[in-house]
Each structure stands twice: as C-alpha cells, then as structure tokens.
Image (tube, rainbow, N blue to C red; front, side, top):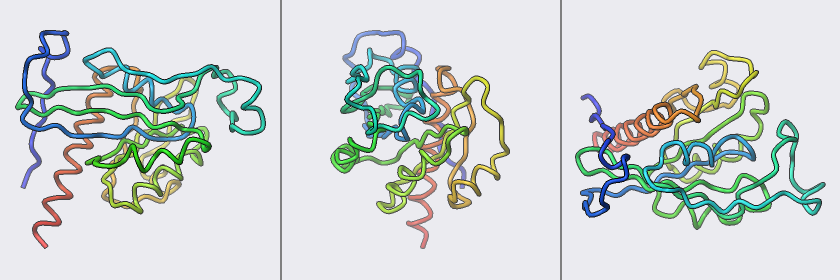
Length: 206
C-alpha cells in the first residue's frame, strides 16, 4: 500500500487570510544538538512569521555549553521555536523547535507531549550531537527522520554510513539536504509524515 501524497498549499504560504479551518492539525518537533539548524529549518518553511526565543550567548555559558564546531555562533534558543505550514487537503503542521543545549533538555518532555513525529537534525562534522535526540525519540516510540544538514565545507557521506554511525534502524529515513531551502525543508516534513503514516499502518496490520 502506498503512502498518501502531501502537497504544499501555496495559498497559505503566500500569507493569505488566516480563516481556513484545517481538517487535521499535527504537532511536529524539530530537534537536534546545538547549532545544527533547527531555527533555520523552522524559519525556512513556516508560512507565518516564526516565534523565536533566541538569546545572545554570554560569558556565563563558558564551560557550560559545548561550542565545539560552532564557535562563531552568537545566539541560542532558550525555550523553543514555533512555526506553521499547511498542506492541501487540510493538513496543518505546527512546528516546535527544541532547545539544543543540554542545560535546557528538561523542557523536552513537555514540548514533546502530543507530537506525532520529529525531525532530528545532525551536523556530519559532529555527529555525536545527535545521539541524545535519537535516543529520546526511540525511548518514547515517536517516529522520526534523521536529516544531515549540508553545511558549507562539510564532507558528504553515503546514507548507510550515516545510519551505521548513528546506529538507527533500517526503517528510519535518512535525508541529506540544506535546510535553508524552503523546498528542501518542506520535503523533509513530507518524508516524516509518510514515515509516520507507514508506522501506523504497520501497527494496524499486526
């Protein structure tokens, strides 16, 4: 049985009147380590101005936050990012970007409540930053896809090498793209939805 096709609603993205009532509203998490592109993905795809809770990094974070590989980063998400995207057929996704720094992980359980799936962003230059997110969703049986964000200058690796390095199951989709692109970010969400639907069908058929 094939998965349903999710098509982007161009009318919603153009900033038209917000008087449409979606048939289905779904909560999606955008997760991953510090500086992997969560805020960027939400901003790239959201049809409304994203809500951001970014604060400037200060000397107080020295010795607390792991800035290896992202030394040039000057801000961090301290609560969550929020955005929205609507697909034709009445499917609307509410996107919640989680904070990536370890000192904010205590909020993840609350943010994850009611989520139907998650995008786990990883940076191939520091894959270890993705392990905690993967473990979080595996333990809670929340469907997820792994997205290797293509940072400038980062080496490219075959999907199976990434799967082995991250130790994720064979049925977990691996996507490699630059999440700054709206189309690429949207396609990531479509992949997640199809994966989540496949998981429900597999459970129902048992």
